[in-house]
Image 1: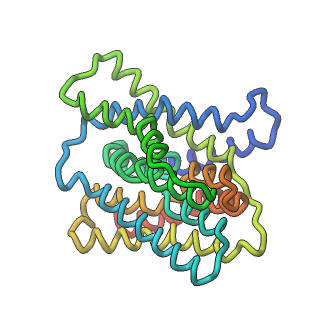
Image 2: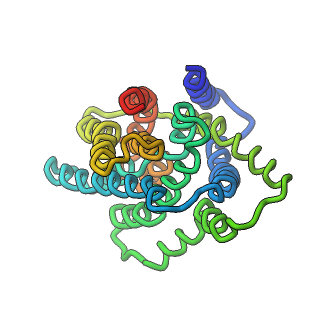
Length: 300
């Protein structure tokens, strides 16, 4: 309970900061950059060498790909069914599919399962959502956000330059080496900064504006993201006998997280229904704190 009070407190603090004049301009952007470029790579460098790769350790990757792929197919179908505009379809293909496995996933899941869940979160995030963000997200933004040709070279460069992915590759390449104690201490310190900074950043970016014409895609997105996605994960884990494993439970909880904040930013930058995208991210984050708790009670 204390961990959830802490989560809500950090988000509230960020929301308060958003509504007062701070000496630091665009604080959320600075926090996001620090997390993406420094803190998250530090956590990856610290946790990845602890991973003993096996078929079982690929469970988070299987769940991530299956749930995100299923959501993408369902969004495409319902967008055709309800005649959503190109902009709304593109927005939903981003914010409904890509999961907030880091900014919300880390604090929420570690609150339930402790730090032993971190290696599984790293796998889900790096080989799941982050990989999809760099590839699928880039493609969707380019396809729905512009009429120009999509360059495979551009997508490849974005993947190669993504800091957490670079850290993941580096950590795997040098996994047989042991870090000096001062490096471990530094990495642990930077890792501890992810949760408060991420949640304050979430609070700084919360938006609650929504037009009546956007209610249908809004509800559809939240139902798919917060309810259907974890149901798919549960079915897959039950079928393959992963339902009682910690790695399976972590993967199920990750699949229930709200929309990735970065996905909302990408949608907004590319003119893909910015107000709708931000509303899905904001309401989704708050609702996911409750729905993930219910889900945890069901699978623990």
